[in-house]
Length: 317
Image 1 (cartoon, rainbow, N blue to C red):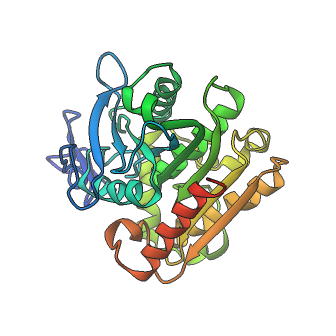
Image 2 (cartoon, one colour; image 1 turned 135 degrees about the vertical axis):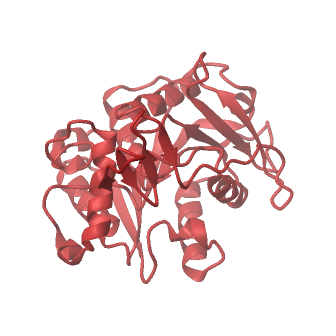
């Protein structure tokens, strides 16, 4: 991200601009769509407030075949966007989650957390934790009461959302919430980072590398080093070893030199931590970052969707 011009103190085109008066202008990732009945899948959705002031919200989804007499898994989803873009109301995520809810036959809570740079980390983590506590509260929402099996909860997200899904899984391991059992975590192209290049990152594009680093600087004001546990969970092996779930699926795009390498390193760190659970990595070759959101009909995206659906429903009756 380039520094100032006459009109802005930081020009992060094509992502965002921060003007001299502090105003943040997002150039992408601002579109929203309403909740409601999805005619293609029959999935129904509606929006709720998590906090009394409305600063944290969520979009809830239930499948067409939802039966109050048979509880089904609950997916808690955290959207991507480098912590600074997108929302739970995004047409991209709304379309993807309608499809996933239909195919997996699950209830989903898509969390709308506050964004950087207006709300630096750990705000996104704290907002996401508030949503999880809201889910755990008795009688919190009629759809959750009727349809969601809180003994089969999954945390998932892509990019920054994958990062959040990890940190929520680790936090639940150290701060258990009665009534919530985390069955698994699904991290897609998780946004991890570090000071030193690893594996194929030695060939990484300087401009993209600087852009990703700048996103972390926006997320953590005054950042001195990229060796930070929010970016690299491997720096906290004891916390890794206390993950609340017994199964983790990491999905990585092979042409995404950055998140793919970091995803593999995360899997290795998890195995070495003494956690004792099962971690699996699905690597989709020849495709880039969050490809599954951009072309859901492609062969590799269909394969990824099937893997996620199977992971969620493994062992279900």
